[in-house]
Length: 262
Image (cartoon, rainbow, N blue to C red; front, side, top):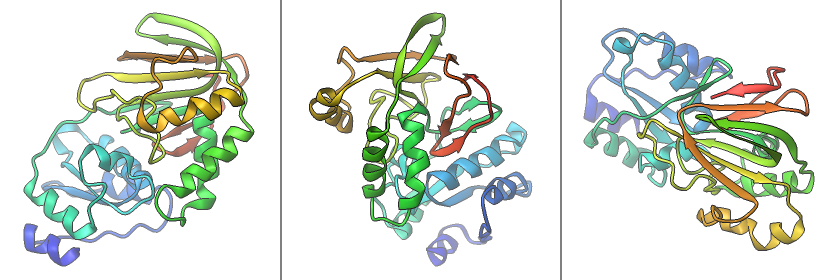
């Protein structure tokens, strides 16, 4: 892969990460004049690199490319490189065009694909123990475990002035359509329309789980009575059940707030 990168771009500097947060620091410290930054990893690595780049002045942000070697590779699905081997992904990046993508922000942190509360966040918490399982299998197992222990949160929602309150088992705020490798909760989300797509799923029982939940894998759930979809530039969430836990691009966050604004 590195040999191919140098064949395409000439001088290439390799910067391995040493632990959580290091990719953000590396991206923040990229020297002026660098033509591109390539994140080699999964959605967590992409999340960290994007946060590092977004902390820079707009004029000094080089384009971000992704060579996906993670588990879910949800961001890479939007760049059509998710199924490519590393060397092929490098060749695709070298031949491709640069596009502007939307970026979300919540609790002072950026996200480039999705933010989830409730069942979604519990899956992100559980999946870490299955990181080394092949493909999306770890996400599926984590999702099954989270479903077994699910509980509905009493949430108040506002999307660009459209407000509602409901017991909510799943809340997904998406820039891209897919989260967790296989779950298309916001199937119509576009990463360049300037809008956040929102999916909430109310309280549900085993009958819903067995007969309707599989529709999420194909993004065919949006018309179900338990589901509410919305779209807007600003999403506000307030919980009656204490501090919220959320994932941002699969990275778990629990800052101790009972509200968030994305």
